[in-house]
Amino acid sequence: MDGTAVTVSVIVPAYNHAAWIGQAIHSVFRQTLTDWELILIDDASSDETWSVIQAYTRPLSSENGRITTIRHTHNQGAPTTLNEGMALAQGEYIAILNSDDAWQPERLERMVRFARRQELDFLVTGLTLWDRDAGCKDESEPDWLKWYRSLYADWLSHGDFLRTLLRGNFFITTSNFFFLRHLFDAHGGFANLRYVHDYEYALRLFGKGVKMQCLWDEKLLNYRLHDHNTIREKPLAAIEENMLMLLEQLPELYPYLDYSRLEGLKLQLQDLQRYTREEWLSAIHYQLLNKEKELFGLIYDRDEWIQERDEIISNQQILISDRDDWIAERDHTINTLQADIRQQEQNLQERDRIISGQQGWIADRDRWITERDQWIAERDQLIRERDEHIHKLEQELQRLLHSRAYRTGTLLAWPIRQLRGRLHPDRWKFNHA
Image (cartoon, rainbow, N blue to C red):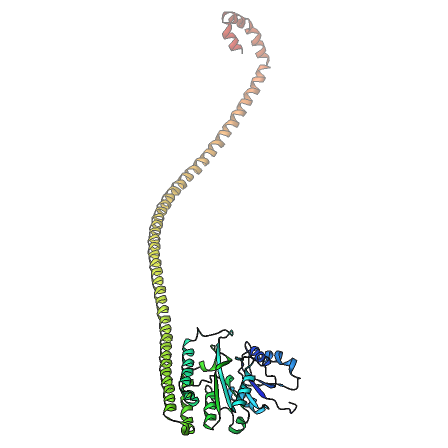
């Protein structure tokens, strides 16, 4: 900062709101009141929150030093981060804007003008309920809206700020806080509470005599209600913290309490008791559902196991039946093989008998062959002897045919042959031949 005071110090604590912080910063840039400084503190986000902050603020970071950006190396929580931002603030007023909410363009101008005119120290406004996509959430949050409207109706019926505040935290969020910076110097910052540090701070300041007011009919805040709001993290823990905080604040608020304001506190305690019971019943219900889910899972697993077991038994029965069939086939095969073996044994015996007979026949054949060979040898010998004898006879015949006595006898027998030929020509031819 260059030392020049500004009207409003805007403090934006951020943690893992990369999807929405750009919209929050943009709503500051669009303010009709331009005399502000912006202090952005990233409380060690694990998403792209810091990158979005840099993208929106870097082009303006050197403009009169109006924008300060800080990045924590480890998460310190909302109260500590807010206190750090308020300690750095130089403005006449401090306005807080959480990184998942947004303002209407005229918010700061309207609040500065009204606070100065009414000489107010602390100011909040009405709000519009947003969903995660910046859409109106009137239809999807009927219970929340019913509760918020009941607070508004309470304020309308009495016009008593503290009674309605004791009835419930109609500030809703620190994004609705607009107050003089010297309150921080005089009364300190937020208590280290997880869920109700905003509510505790408002009650503490009221107990110190701070002049406070709510512009119910001016909806200058867009409050984003989503599944990751801190207040929805652990409802029972939030209710317990809220009740303990109220008990601690009662001594400080005692001078301001009357029957009507105690009646407002009574209504809140009744609401808290009802919410506690509902949350307790819901917790039991969800525990029962989880147990039921667990049991159903076990039952489902058991049924699957039984089904698998039955399938195994059925398969085993099939296997046993197949085994019995196989055993019957095996026994039949064995019986067939045994019959075949007996037949083979008979065949072998018959074969041995045949072989034995064949061996006797072979012996007889060999003996006959031997005898045949001997007979052939004797026959061949006889043939040789006959051939020799024939040869000798032929030689003897030739010698006789060429002998003188044969020729003489032939000549002497010629007339007789001629005569016989005439008497018996066929016989003669045959004999002659």
